[in-house]
Each structure stands twice: as structure tokens, then as C-alpha cells.
Length: 112
Length: 113
Image (cartoon, rainbow over the protein chains, first blue to last red):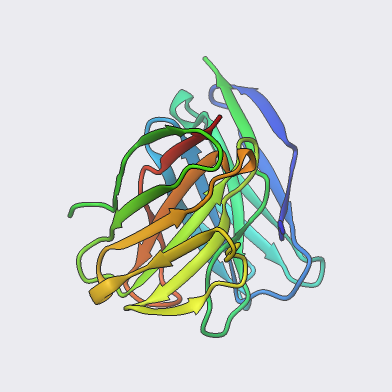
């Protein structure tokens, strides 16, 4: 079953604008990760935020985590055409098994 | 560094036939995962191996799916017999150890007719 739900399901913005995607999850987590998927490069890991962290940055990416609301957001600043892809949040629940539980994804289109 | 390799990249079979997928993880990665991604959805974990032992196979439909990781390196995933609803992309991922970043292969796109 899907753990996370991304919002919105689809997003279209102009190149240079910022894109924000949200993710909500249901059960307690060990960490939350964001992945990007496009036909050219497959599924690529973007950033990991642990349950005791509230914000993390990596280049043009900013991720926040609110464990009290069971939600996370991914902000991509100064978007580029190459950012066009589907973005998924994925969680692990700790313990020995750490397979990822993915949401349904947000499809982001950057208009040139 | 070479990435996760998978073969074949595409496979078309008829329902009730059998099919097998192969995965070669990144060298030195102890943990290997198989995911199923149905069109329009996120990947779903099927099975996780740590070396050649199974850590989690709770979402693997064991009546028709099987997987093995002999010698703790390469892995195969088999479906026998296939159903129409098995049409999906099957992704293999590996990580250095549990709790680390997972690296995904290009996937095998299976179409069951």
C-alpha cells in the first residue's frame, strides 16, 4: 500500500519559477527521502531527511519535515527545463527492513 | 562507478507464461531490493535481501513470484505464471548497507498480454 501522498498530482510552471511539492504520510517514520524519475535517467535519489531533522538543503533543493503533521515539502528554486520529471517522496519505518514506501508522485512540467 | 544493471530492458509475454528478470547490483553493495512500479504509481517494494538472506518479503505474492540472491551478489526475480496485472516496470536497487541511499537500475518493462 502507498504510504505517502504527494500534492499536487501535476504541476506546470515557467522556467525560472520556484516549484513546491508536498507529501503526507500515515505512520511514524525513520527518514523521508525524495526521488526524481524521468525517462532519461530513471529513478534518482535527491535528498534524505531524518525524523529528527526539520529542514535540509542541497543545491537548489530545500526539504522540510513536520513530523507532528506527518508531512514534508520539496522546494525547487529557479527551475530549469531539465527539472521536468516525476517527483516521489518515500519513507522508511526503521528496524532491519528499510525498503522504501513511495507515494504516487507529482508530475512537474517546466515550460521554457 | 558502474550502476545497477538489469536485463532484459523489455519483455512481452502472454498470460500464464513464465518470466525471469536479472539484476547485478553495484559492487560491494550488501543490500538489494526489488520493486514493482505500475503505470501512474510509485514503486512498491517486493523483497529486500541482505547479502543472500531475505530481510523482508511481506509484499511478495509468493504464490507466483519468487526471488533469489545466490552468493549475495546477483539476483533473479521470477513470475510463474504471469497475470495481466503483473504488467509493470520491475526495478532493482542496491545500497551499501541497510539505512543508506538506494541506487536504482533502469528497470525491466514487462507487458503481459
